[in-house]
Length: 94
Image (cartoon, rainbow, N blue to C red; front, side, top):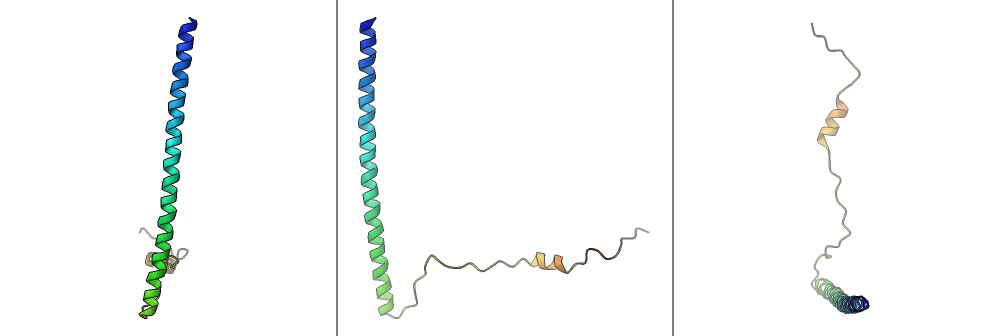
C-alpha cells in the first residue's frame, strides 16, 4: 500500500512540475508578445509623426484624428408627432 501511495505521489509531483514548466513557458511567451506590441506601438507613433511632418511640408490638410464628433441624427417622425394635437376632438362613430 505504501508503494502505491509513493508511486501516486511521485506521479503527482511529476505532473505538477510539467504544469509549472508549461506555465513558465506561457508566461515567457506572453512577456515576449507584450514587448513586441510595445515596439509596434512605438513604430506606429513614429510613422504617424513622419506622415504628419510630410503632410505639413506639402501643405496638406490636417490628418484625421480619432476625436471626431458625430452629427446628431434628426428624427423626422418625432417632429411630426409633436405637431399632432392629442387632447382636442373626439371620434364620432355615428
